[in-house]
Image 1 (cartoon, one colour):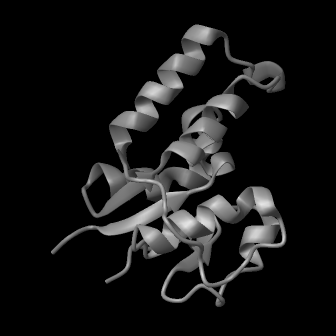
Image 2: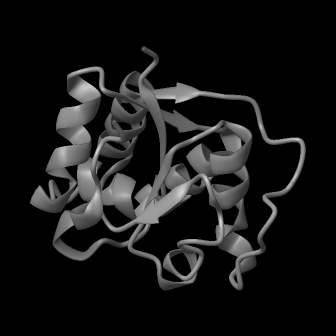
Length: 140
């Protein structure tokens, strides 16, 4: 059986790669066990690279640490082609639309986010489930 595909928004990647947030633990564990396949495309990876360079307070990263985070992302995520179309539902935040488009185009089962505009899409993007990290469960 093929692992369920999952999309992570940029803040979830930050929680995983920079902040080591325990809430992302179930996602990390599912990936390590091969139960999910995390997918990313160029647009989402580019946003991650840009955000890794932001002032993150006590966790601000130098260029070497930013590169290490991107390298880790590339190890755990599968790079897929950019979507050729849009998701059937539009996000009120145009900057977040790329995550919906990717989830639909890649056949993802789950989009993990803490972003309110994306969470508002829960139930409107079937069969993709939009969940917070605490609501993450690997599909049966």
